[in-house]
Length: 233
Image 1 (tube, rainbow, N blue to C red):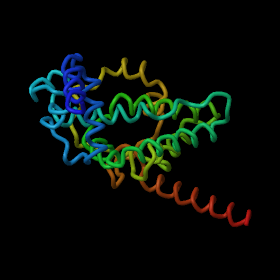
Image 2: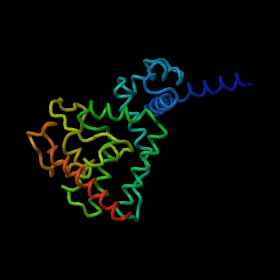
Image 3: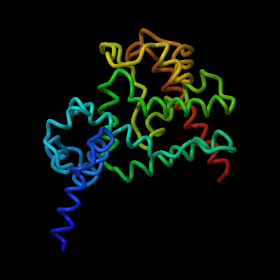
Image 4: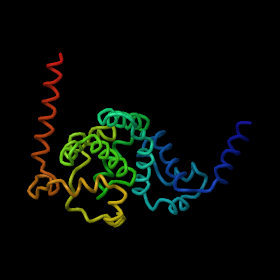
């Protein structure tokens, strides 16, 4: 009976039309099971009951596969809470992101690597960050303070600890990036932030942000927080 059931399940998978969503979902499941290093197009194809070449109609290469997997995971993060203050809303979303990463332990490494490799984050990551900027703005934060907050929080916005907002002036433009007007329509908060923040051509991390100012801002914020905790104790 077990053999018949397994055969029926395999036949059902083969009959179901192949789609990008199925490919990405299967890739995420395999990475959860054996880690992302063991992931391959051949393994994904075997799990789906198709030939490997069939996958390339939906993902062009391994990097596009990884980018798509990141977007699948980001969509697991809870939407913004309604009827609450900015601090509670941000905290809930960050903790939701952390729960997502605990379900997928391989994800931080992939997010970090693909963030460094891409000129712009993936669409789902952009939409998530845009909504987080929107929460800060709705909470009364001026755009400059939002800029500092994103640097301080870094990848904690996605549930782990790594700098997400590194500048990469030497990389060529992303050929797949939407035109500026489309980016502005999709991600209005990030567009406003990019247009408003100050830039420092002599920054040791490259043009884009004043790294000394960001370092001092994060240090002062940390020390202020420790002082507040000391007083409370």
